[in-house]
Length: 341
Image (cartoon, rainbow, N blue to C red):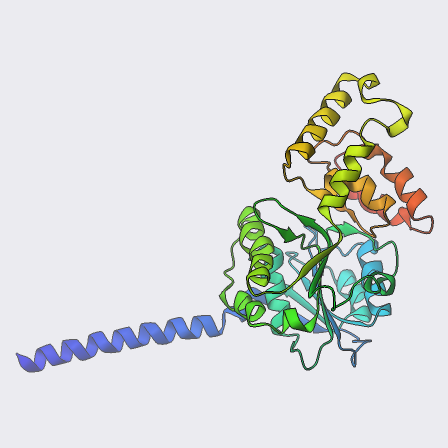
C-alpha cells in the first residue's frame, strides 16, 4: 500500500515537473513564435550611440514612401535604427526599401500592438547606458518629419528633461504621446524603464495599451523622479487655441455656419473647463504653425473627431513648411483616406 502511494506521488511529481518544463520551454521559445523573421539591414550607422526603435504597421504589408523618408532622415541624424513591423506580411519590396537605412528588420505577429513591438525591438537592440547616448521610440502614425531630426534634437537637452515628447496629454493621467519619445540615459538606463518592459504583457487592446503602456510608462518615470517634457506643451497650445477661436478667416465665431459655430463653441467650453483633449488632433493647426514637424496620419485620412477646419491642412503645411514634400502625403491618402477634400 505504501509502495503504491509512493509510486502515485512520484508520478504526480513527475507530471508536475514535466508540466513546468513544458511551460518553461514555451516561454523560452515564445519569441520564436511571435517573431516571424529577422533580416539584417545595411546598418549604415553601425558605430553610432544614437539608437532608435521604429514601429511600422500596414494591413497590406506595404512600406509607404513617406515612411522611407522618415527612416532616411533618422539615418542622416545618425540613428542606428531597428525596424519592427506588425504587418501580417511585409512585402519583399518593403523589406528591400527599408534595408539601406536600418540595422535590422524584425517581422512579428501583431501581438501587444506598438508597445509589444517596441519590447521585441529593444530585446535585440542591446541597449545600455554604457553603449547609447540617445534612444528614440517612434512609429509611422505620422507624416513627417518636415524638418531634419538634427534640428529637432537641438531643441532637447538632458539638463532640462530626461524624456522628451512632441506633445503631452492630461487624458486619464499626465503623459507624453508615444508616437515620438526621446530618452536620455537617465531614463532608458533606469530601473523603472527596465522593470516596465520586463513586466509588460502582450495585450491586443488599444485602450489597454494607452492606459497601461503610453500612460503607464510615463507615470513610472514620474514616480521614479525622472523629468518629462513636451516640445509643444498642452497648456501653451490650449491658451493659444482660446485666443484663436473665432478669428480664423477673419470671421467672428457667431458669423459661422451652425455646425462650425457649435463645434468651436463646445471646444472653447472644453478648454476653459480643463477637459483633456488630444492635442495632436484638436490643436493640429497651432502645432504646424509652431513648426511641430509631424502631422498625424489618421487626422487627415479619417478625421475621427470631426474637426471642421481640417481641410485647411494643405495650406497650413505649405505656409509653415514650404519645403515639405506634400506629394508623399497625397500619395498615401489616395490609397488610405476615407475623407475627400
